[in-house]
Amino acid sequence: MAGTVLYPDFNAYPGIFTELNPVELPVTSLIMAKGIELLPQKEYTYTYHTNPDMVSPTLTLAGDLGTVNYGSTGFTTGSNVMNVWFEGAAVSWARLNDQSLGRALGFNGPQNPSFEANPMSRALADALLRMKTQFEYVAREGIYRSNSTGDGTWQQRGYRKAPGILNTAVGVAGGSAVGSLAVLTRAMLEDTMQTLWDRKVNGSDRLTILCNSIAKRQLGSIWGSQYNVGLNNVDSRTYAGRNIQTILTDFGEIDIVLTHTLPQSQMYILNLSQMRAVGHVSKDGQLIYESPTLPPGVAGDGRALYTEMGIDHGVGSCHARFYGIGSTAGHITTGTIESA
Image 1 (tube, rainbow, N blue to C red):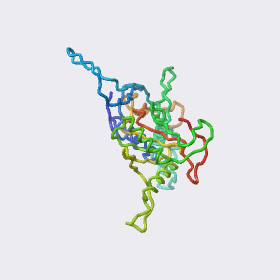
Image 2 (image 1 turned 30 degrees about the vertical axis):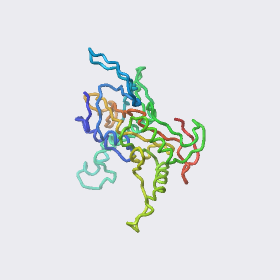
Image 3 (image 1 turned 120 degrees about the vertical axis):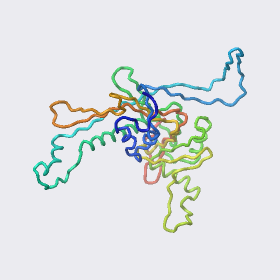
């Protein structure tokens, strides 16, 4: 079974999973909103490439066959895997019985102040949220591991490790050593945008900056101060300030997404058009499979949720990462500088 589906015709879990907490988990939410591409196995291939310079090629023509020997375009094939996710929910019968206070005795009161219509539904919602929170993290930080040893471990490669991603040290690169963090500059961002453009893989795709609060303040300071955004508001005497959500550069517009999920010292420029959500239909033809889990002899009800999904980072040379960001007043000024 293969193809791209927005909400697979399975149970309701894939749709619920996609829409969970889009503000705090923006990358997985934005990418999954485009659909989930169903693949026939957990391991899949992707292609990354570099476009050659425009030249007058020397072509070898075989007139009898009509074939042409073109120059190389630098295509390279790699592989990635989907993560295997397993979460569960359990509610004791004692908890379920607490919900029946009063009704089981045939009178209306007293009311149970802790009444919950369906504790299992809440527990399953919490399990889905745990799974998606881990999904957001592994989509970025995952280290590729295929089940080559048969131990059942699968982990996707996150976009931080995507082959060809452009890494820029804002502060002093010190590996695991403590060093000085530094402030983002407009030149750094524009140099990075130019390098991405010169790689000739993004084209006219709209890019997205993913950042936490320190980088967001610095972006606002760079573009807001230089262009007096929010300072010369002649239309209102009661409303002032700025919240820069899109910036314009010589190489295209970039949207800014603020999230808690990124380390404060990092910022990414992502081409979301090159990324996709991938899934592998698991047991009983379900993308997210639900099954009872508690063994006999346990006084409670339990459910397990199992799925095989991942975020394909696509062409790594479309993306960029900044690290060593800091020195904003009132926040981090020194700390561990991560290497690329």
